[in-house]
Length: 433
Image (cartoon, rainbow, N blue to C red; front, top):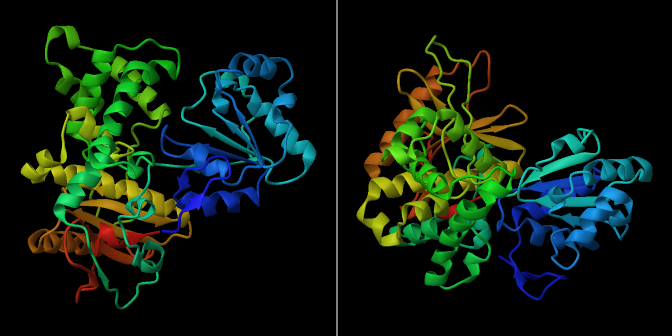
């Protein structure tokens, strides 16, 4: 991928899928709010298109910025547009001030707001932002953005059901183990192996020691936070209840917490975008089989769970079942990044009979694709294809569209191709938006 130099620093900038999305939104709305986990590149991406910047958390001016947000917030908004307000959630009153400016300027592309947490003092926000704001979610880099996927197969083009696809996959299983552990953190993607792998551990430490309490001012126990994250990691990719997660945490009496308390910890983790569960997809089925509506547990990046459990690439290579679970998280991360770019969302499906589909990419126009995620191997690919066909047969196509495509998304394998039964087999190392 072509590297561009940021006009605000001399570091090389890897283009993001969010670049085009941000430009499109700036052309249609007065203010854009970019949300997502810290370290995922929100500020750097916004800097590429900003004409002036206010760093709210700059230690040299933080106190002044906060006071000015209380006294005369319009002063902070003065500057060439688009004006970037970084870590805006530190002063929630800026929200209404920005909405007021957008209303009175009558122009699009005025402000870009970035933040790695939902603001605490939402009571200071009196307007929803409807009609003035547009939202953009950023996540850690997909393999295509970080350069490990060659991007020869487009998710968008699969919705047109091509008769033939063909691409060569260069990623091997040891590459995947490393990429799962490294994650998609932009800074890590530019480092050598050992240094790159340490970034996720530092991220987890920061979350546990500071961020989980800082997000809403509630002092949370770091030992409890670590135990909860470990339990979450062991249950990721499942529909585990909070009760199940709490039971898994209970190593001794000192660590016992209530379901309500655990729910508070998990809500804090959602607010700082550490966890991002997958909602259940509810299609029209021919039979009356009940669809399970519980969310599926995922981290926003697989490296978080890896770091919480203290694993390394060699650990994954010795335990392919565990590697398969974290590979699923990696694939869901990438599918979410790609789906956002084509006005889609990613869901999970499971019914009471046990029939399951790892990911359903559903577009705003009603089209959808069914995806099974397998680490690789003919047996697992065949199993995934059969599962997809069983689900497709259950869908009532008199009440909704047929699936635009069925895909087994794999880690290993030499090629991307379309099987004789119409199911696509695509290595994650070949996929893009």
